Length: 460
Image 1: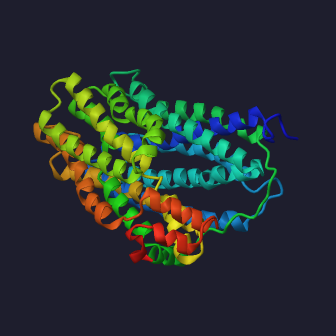
Image 2: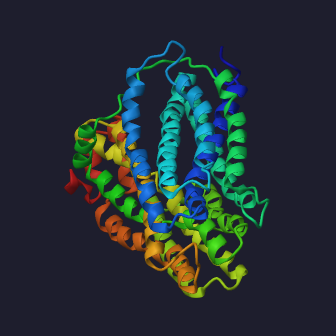
Image 3: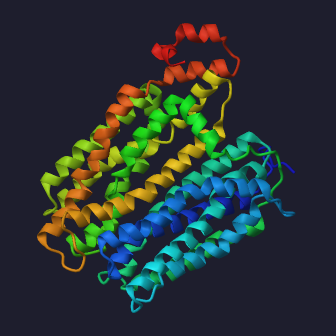
């Protein structure tokens, strides 16, 4: 039955869907942002952490397309996606608590095995909900506008869920906060997450069962990369830009080992990530007046320049530290908000060039790139600060400087590499994409489109 807006889902369904996204991102942010600090506190050095986390994180990068095939092949009587989500409600909290409940007294070899097995278990539990929660919106309603509204709600609540542990967890586990330790903190996070995730199991209904595009094989993905050069160029630049962006990873380590107070991580995270919310609010209006590519380049440049400047400014004054971090956060916010808006443009270009849209392959590359960066950045960060002289067991001035240098100036290395890739390689502009979309939709002819395009024709 349709409600007064013509939609078929109830308020309770949409609310539980949004709350699930909130809880899902609590778990993801808690594990990915604090696992390195947790292992440092449990006696592992930086190089060992880098090695231990690399294998599970590579598994994290490649298991999504594998699981996508499993979703397409397995059919359940009670829905295509809800059964997977119900399993995640059970396994994600268990896996999260188990990962952070490693006994401190066990031998180093046992700790390594615990972390590898625990992280793989957690990542597998998380993977079984990642694709299904996106796809669930397509079966909740057959109405495109309603699906868009449901997914938009999920993005909003998911963003809020990402902030929640960054603000709360530093106040819980450390000696300068509630001093609960990581184990009890993980149990509390898992319990809260379970309660928030549970309603979706009973309120949401799958109504529409349209055929979903099959997950692309590795061969098809590589073929798409070769034929859609702007997609390849953009994600090459995005990889370098992201792989040295260790701000979120180093905030808790910098606060605990350099500033000597882990609770300061809350304020630093607000300063670094808070501007993202403001940027997200003003970006739609700003992008109507300025091509988003130029805004993106400006954001990257701002982030790089302020990152280098912050190293020389120092952290002796907390007020200055927070102020410069906020300014840097505006560049970080522009990078974060705009970074995922270029994939649809590449889809239009690919459609215009080959006649096939291949959205599934393009967005699979987006997911793969995000996971690959996540697989590399934590290990790379630990290796760098270790090589520069940081030792969590004996923090010297050299070690503090290693963390500060990596936290500030070295995050600009990826931006310096990425900028020429974007500027000289990525030629799609908003006016061109609008023409390509009109042509792809049959609203103008190919000849009319080509007459108005810029120098894009050379890339056909």
